[in-house]
Image 1 (cartoon, rainbow, N blue to C red):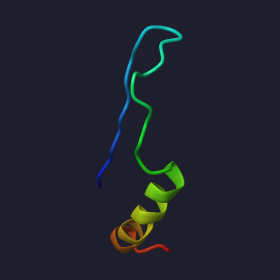
Image 2 (image 1 turned 45 degrees about the horizontal axis):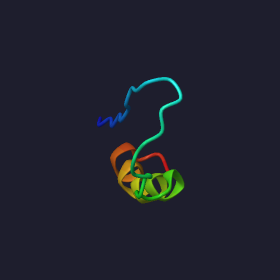
Image 3 (image 1 turned 180 degrees about the horizontal axis):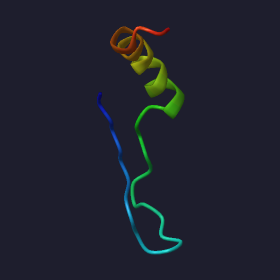
Image 4 (image 1 turned 90 degrees about the vertical axis):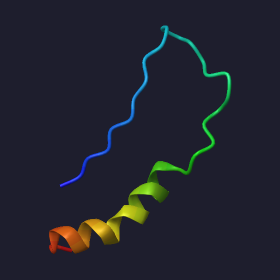
Length: 43
């Protein structure tokens, strides 16, 4: 089983200098669906 966790800590109310330019969460989850289904064999 694989797990990916990404987090950051910062000052309360701080804003990043550069906005997030990565894909939306839904797109990432959709891309992982087939691999998870293959691995878990329950889709």
